[in-house]
Image (cartoon, rainbow, N blue to C red; front, side, top):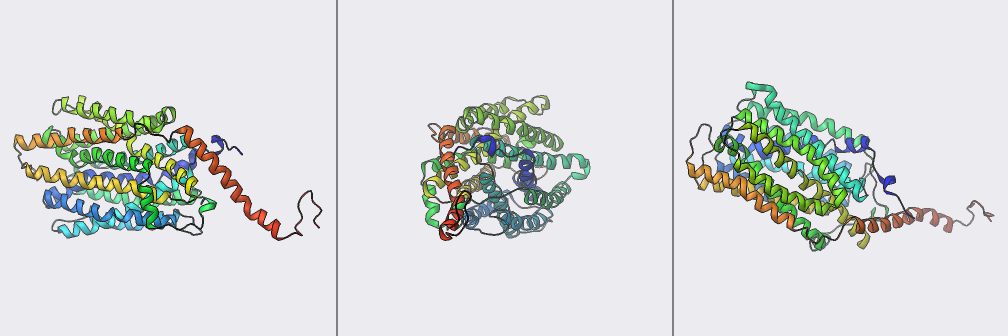
Length: 472
C-alpha cells in the first residue's frame, strides 16, 4: 500500500495560509530580542542589570510551561481540531501583552516588566508551539517538511523585514519611544488578520490511532531520554545561544562599538533579515538534496566564518557591513528551520514505535531550549557588560575596555555556541531513507485503522448488503 510523496505534497496556497501567523510572531520576536531590552534600559530608565534580570527570570519561569502546554495540546479534542483552538486562544493574550509592554511609559518598575513579559511569553509559547505541532501533522513527507518549514521561516522573515522598515519609513518620528510604539500597533493589527487566514483555510487531521490517546509526565521524560531528541535538544540550545547573544547586543555593538548611527543600524538589520529570506529558501532546498543533518552541519561551519569576519570590517563602513551582515543572516536562517523539520521526523518515529502522538511534547522540548538560550544570553551578556563598566544610557561615553568586552561577547561567543550545536549531528541516523520506511509503515497502519469502523459494522450486522454478495 504505497503512498507517493507527490500525493502528500501540500499546495502552495495552503502552505502560505498556514504560514501567515509566522509574520506577526516573528515581528514580535525581533522587537523583543533587539529593541525591547534597549527600550527599557535607554528610554524607560531601568538599569541594564534590571532588564537582563527581568528577561532571565521570565524565561526561567516560562520554560516550565511548555511541557504542560505540549501535553495539553496532545490531549485536546474539539470540533475545531487539536491545534487550531490553541492558536485562537493565544492571540488575544499576545495582543494585550504587546500593548502593555510596547506602550510602556517611564516610571514603571522591574516587577511591571517581569509580569507583562511573562504574559507575553506565555502567549507566544502557545502560538509557536501550536503552529509547529500543527505543521508536523500537516506535512508528512520528509522532503515536503523542509519545504513547509522553509515557507514558515520565509514568511517570518517577511514579518521581521516589515517591522524593521516601519521605523525607517517613519523617519525622525520614530526617534525615542515612538518607533517601539508603532511596532506594537503593527503587531496588534497583524496578528488577528493572519490568524483568521490560517485557521479558516488550513485543514487539520488527527491521526486516527491517537485520537483517544492520553499524555502524562512520564511520556515527557521518556522523550527526553531518546537519543535523537537528546541530540536535537542539545543542538537547538547551542544554536539558540549564538543568534540570541547577537540579538540582545546588536544595537549596542553596531552603535557604540562600531560607530554606526541609529538609522544605519536599522538599515543593516533590514539587510540581515532580508538575507534570511533567501537563506530560508536555500537551506530548505539544500536539506532536500543532502539531508537535514548535513545541511545543519554545513550551516554551523559557515556561521563560524561569517560571524568572525565581522571583526575584520572597519568601523562605520556600510559598504562592507551590509554584505557582512547579509552573509550572517543568510547562514543563521538554517538553524530553527531545519531543527523544527527534524523534530517532526522524530515524532513520526515515536508514533510508529509507541502508537502515541507526541508532537506537542516534542516541540515543547525544543521551544524550551530556545527559551533557556535567550534567558542565558540576555541575562549573562547584560551582566558581563555591567561588570566591565559598560553604560547603556543614551549619550554615555564608555571606556575602551568596556567596548572591547562588548565586541568579544557579540562576535566570538556565538561562534563557539553554534559550533557545538552543529557537532551534535555527526552520525545522525534518521535520514531520508529511514524516514521513508517509517512513513510507509505509518501510512499502511493508518489506512487499516481508517477501514476498521467499516469492517466492524459489516461484522456486527450480517444483514448488511455487500457489493458482490447475497446479503442474506
